[in-house]
Each structure stands twice: as C-alpha cells, then as structure tokens.
Length: 63
Image (cartoon, rainbow, N blue to C red; front, side, top):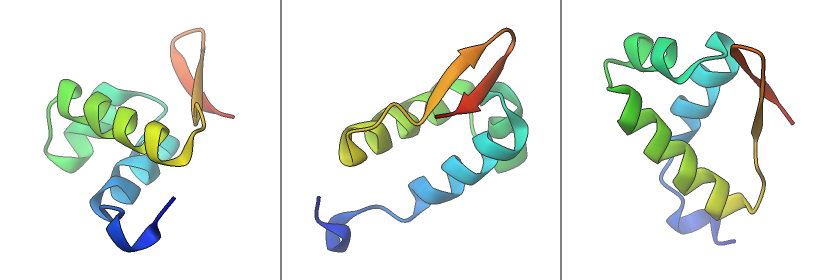
C-alpha cells in the first residue's frame, strides 16, 4: 500500500462509521449518501486489504 496516494477523506468516512456504527448515520454526519459512504469503505477496504467492519445485528462493528 502506498500512503502517498491514499485519499485522506476516506479516513473521515472510517471515523464516522466507527463512531456511528452505520453507513446511513455516518452519511448524515458527513453530508454524504449511504451509497457514497459504502463506496468509500469499499475503496478503503481494498487499499488496506482488510474488511474493517463486520455486521453484528443492526450495527457495523470494527474488526
């Protein structure tokens, strides 16, 4: 992974999902749609080669 090319805005999404436990709530917090948050998480998962979150009931929990 090359940190020089990592979009640092993805870290804002990571922080919001971690705090909210939901892509919908994180999107509201960031002023983004749920699909934009989901897409950002997908890019971050790919960049870090890690699932980052797993679904536990109605919430996303960090791995």
